[in-house]
Length: 298
Image (cartoon, rainbow, N blue to C red):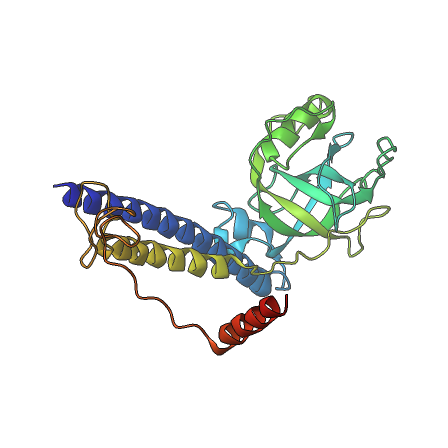
């Protein structure tokens, strides 16, 4: 019964460890798949020809339409700028300029679209930089669409947000737009990364760089975790097949007497047969002869 409990215990632990390793490998595989899809979308959509905004946003932005360029005609709401903090660019601290664009043409006329017009680099000891106002009046913009980000649970000073959540941007910009005709307009569930305004980049702002998406080492990690899972199962089987260590009074391994040192019949024990004397080596015989000669001289 004790052997059965030991076998069940060892195999149960091995199965638990293997299951954990398999789950960790599946998670790493999922991360690899996500990176692969993002890289494929960038390759397909980023440099595609722009299409009208309503072609992609009439029913919401589909996952396979992310980063696709669109064209929209509208006007920026005055005094509705919002700053995005905590979003470095290429390792440099930056402040991003977010604006609300009221769409003036097409099926989405009257809707609001959040636009990330660009960024300004900052230093640790620098306050908020002066961000140039967007152009007034009608403007034709080319944008790359991104889905709205989840709201941040971190607080931000007035006029700032911690994520590009379109509802958060609309709420923060709300006090400046409540007197305008677009105060009750619907904000679209995506935002645009500005490519150009009337054929030119945004003035006094740095454009968003092309994202760099690498596949990383998640695939390698996934296979490593699965190898660990196999190793856990093999190790469990080997432990089960290995006989338990001998214990006093317990079963003994074949070929062992179990007698402690010094017991009757053990080497050097009283009553045991005398051991055969070892024949001296040639060097020992020469040493003895020299000792005898030296003693004789004295």
